[in-house]
Image (cartoon, rainbow, N blue to C red):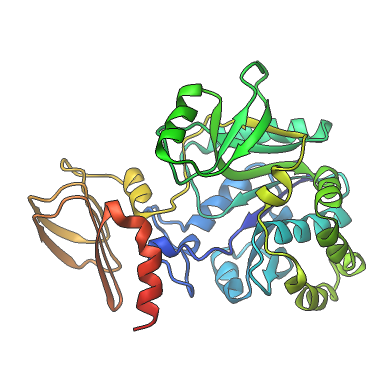
Length: 353
């Protein structure tokens, strides 16, 4: 286990497209979405701890999720849980965590990973991550693990790399915003586009230099707390200064601007588990492509559905195709899978009832 390896585990999202299971009070990263016996954050932490010492894994999350994190990850100490007092997207929290790590270990190499993704072959993930760590320990590089696209997905950003580059690790030409369907199709046909899965690797020196160059105001704001990081004064500084940071993603703040960006095409199966439909893909299914979690079911003329309850409730369905059926507490959701992106809007409507 290399003591120069660190991880930032991003666990502050709400996962509103998984309503009514995922709520602002208890979002999807803290649920066992796949019925595996572990929550998504537990699976991600376990996966990262194959390469990274447990004490070097920091969890970035909302203040209101602090106790949930400590309950689900009992091996983690309070000082490893970094609490965001305000929602400010990914760039500010990554800078904050990176400066903490840099002060502790200026030779550190780190990975930034979402806490709610599904990765099947964890041994291959560890190999890919090790390859990135080795590269970033030697080079001034900002790296990402690119995901091999399997269909023209319009819900992801894409990474375009140099088609002529024969090295395993490719130089990135540019990041591309979420495309329309025809553009996504052309990306797949080109063969040099990858999905942006939001997994980043770099040395603390490289990311610190990038923030200094491309986000000088944000960098100056967080550097004011340098003397306080990893001390009892850190919490006070963050409470009083974090909200002044601009709300911006790491992609827009750094990755789209930097010239020293590289990508390793990942060789593991990946799913961002962003919607009920993406979860349906990864669950065991019956002969009619129905996925059932926790429920006892009688299904007739039913196909391509995902059915979930929190108890062993008997669910009887006749004549439904391609639906999301979720029973959770006092909410019953019966919704076309083809309209799953609208669930975020429906969640907002439900709050006003």
